[in-house]
Image (spheres, rainbow, N blue to C red):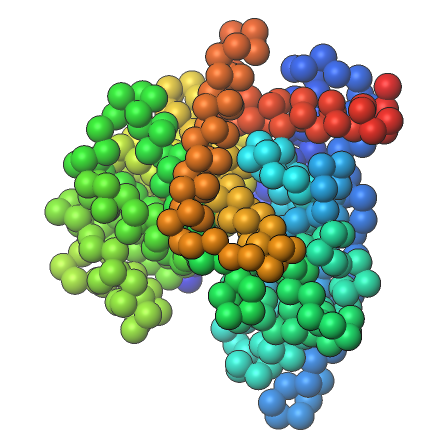
Amino acid sequence: MCMETRSEEKVNTYHVAQGRIRRAVEQLGLPMCVYELLKSPDRLVEAALPVEMDDGSIRNFTGFRSQHNNVLGPYKGGIRFHPNVDADEVKALSIWMTFKCAVARVPYGGGKGAVICNSRELSQKELERLSRQYMQAMAPILGPNRDIPAPDVNTNAQVMAWMADEYCKIRGQNDFGVITGKPVDVGGCIGRETATARGVFYAVRQAAETIGLPLKGARVAIQGYGNVGYYAARFLTDEGCRVIGVTDTTGGAYSEEGLEPDELFHHKKGTGSVKGCGKSTNIDSRQLFALDCEILIPAAMENQINAEVARNIRAKIVGEGANGPTTPEGDEVLDERGILVVPDILANSGGVIVSYFEWVQNNYSYYWPEEQIEARLRQKMSEAFEQLYCFRNECGIEKITMREAAFMYALQRLADVMKVRGWWG
């Protein structure tokens, strides 16, 4: 049974993303033609992906690639494998990537890919064949200067290596810059695996400094214990925080004394769940969101924090490790209650920032040491937070959330570049 919370009615994330764009256009007083240019992806490709299974049968999967806007540079965005993904979700995620890249000030536009599948039901060979089939279908619209995928939910460096290899075979030459998030041995960037979580950590740390919240002893609750949740727990614990609650798709663990991140990781690896780790108490995500803590990290899926859930949150900071974890109604409640939300397009931009570093290194065939990667990431995250926080305070709007400020900040940059390039005005 999935323990992630959901609104009673399924929230259409694509409509939410469009609503945020329209709201930002209106707040900035821009003409509606800017909204028309950004409300829909430039292109959505849907492809049938026939894959031979280990028993010799053929199973037909469905794959998507959404390319939203490339005014700032090539389309950029991850590929997720998930049984419940659909076209509207992929389009919404590509919009978020456009705005995330604009906030982080990396020279990319927004893209996103997906395959409807349950990767846990596939063998390693079936997963490889599916990955290669996806690349065969999408290769005509991808390229190092056109559209650059990366890992996302249920994909990893190995999947990216298979896809990059397939692209190189199609091209007849090595062209590793087509994909980021690869293993280091084939042009990957040191630190890419931890980049999204490290970015969340830097953003939360800066938010805590801004409101005068000491991290030493701060209690943390984390929804989702995949790559982002696990490393965020480690980084925050190393800073002196105490992780008291964690949930995944099958349940959760709570201990007021604190949960050890590596112990949780190994327990989940061995049992398939964080539930039952050590002397912890079992909880679900609704209980996790209501925990008495200082920092909440939603690092699972979209639309987890609706208005009802938001009313019970007691954290002082919500650092969004996932994309779109908070509904518009939930966002309003959090703002009314004075809870500082570090929005997804800022908080989890560490992944695309380090993907940019990887792409640059691939293009130059020159690779930086790990300490240089971390220093550059820390600088980029700090600059993005400061610019966004200053924009929020100086934009002239009396009551504005951090999320609204982020969309306005990104939209202004996109509008300015589109105007300079002659797309409107």
